[in-house]
Image (cartoon, rainbow, N blue to C red; front, side, top):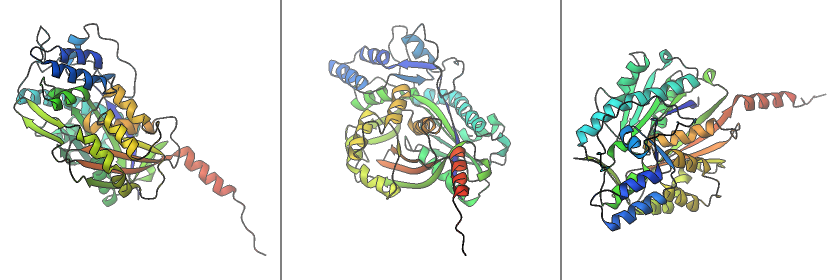
Amino acid sequence: MTARILSIGTAVPPAVLHQNSVRDLFAAQPGIGRLSQRLVRAAFDASAIETRHTVLTELADALSPEREPEREDAATSAPAEPASLPVISADRALLSPSTGTRNDAYIALAPELSARAARDALSAASVDPAEVTHVVTVSCTGMYAPGPDYRLVRDLGLPTSVERYHLGFIGCAAAVPGLRAAARICAAQPDAVVLVVCAELCTLHFRVADDPDQILAASLFADGAAAAVVSADPDRRGDRWLDLDRFATAVTDDGERDMTWTIGDAGFEMVLTAEVPRIIGREIRAAVADVVGDTRVDTWAVHPGGRAVLDRVESGLDLPPDALEASRAVLRDYGNMSSATILFILRSLLDGDALRDGQTIATLAFGPGLTMEAALLTAGTAAGQRAARDADRAEPVASWT
């Protein structure tokens, strides 16, 4: 039996960062050199990002004292909580809290975001929390124990017998292994209902530095959570779903030092060199062949590590200019939310007007290593299934005399 995504829920913090305002703040920091100022402006202006969400309400308030009303979109939001991390001084100088202080903010703020995304997904799938059999949590921006998997059991009222698994510190590509784990669970236990939840608070690790890698990270990353309900039980299918057909993993020949994520004394430290898009563009065709094979791909869901990554994927696979429209839209409106981002893209496809029965979706994500994770999905719709059955019944039956 094929495991399928029954629904996807998303959640973002209510505080919005406008890219131009964040750019100007970083470029005006005390002590920043002229070269770094130019790098800040170049990185932010080339990002193709307009807005991002953050749990750092103090930072958002400093940039937009009269904050605009929150837009209505696919991601649920809630009233802002008091900022728990001191990040900016009265004279608009960015502070540098310790890693412990940043992680304390993660412990305080990440569970609520995870729970909102999970509730959204469960409601959309018409699944009662008591029916969940397995939980897979994903995060690389904080850590604690009992961890995110335990908190979901408590916060959602899941059965205490739920089997729990946590994929930590895998990076931006981790949602695909999370879905793969859910598919493997469903293959072994066809009546399983697996809740996969990704939550990332990347902005907790913002820092001011002359290092180009840190400048690039500050121009891209954002906060958000997403959850998927996965099951192989055909009776749980609703109006639309995504079959999880195939998965593939590839590690590039080089790039081990070009994308890294380590723990420093003043937050987690990202290395994201200019080589990453070039490596992806060079090796993407072989990586995609492993999961796609001879299947015709109708739609692409590609993790937007940045605009340059999407550009390289597009050129490396000879895709038309509009092929990565869903990925570019999520990058524009939400930035790079690490592991949660690919689920935001899949949700936009699953809930979109263009979804049709039998539509194939190639899903690609990239993480430290440099690792490429891929999945091939097939969309299903109840209307399409009914139409196919009606067509079969209408076929003339041959008579033998």
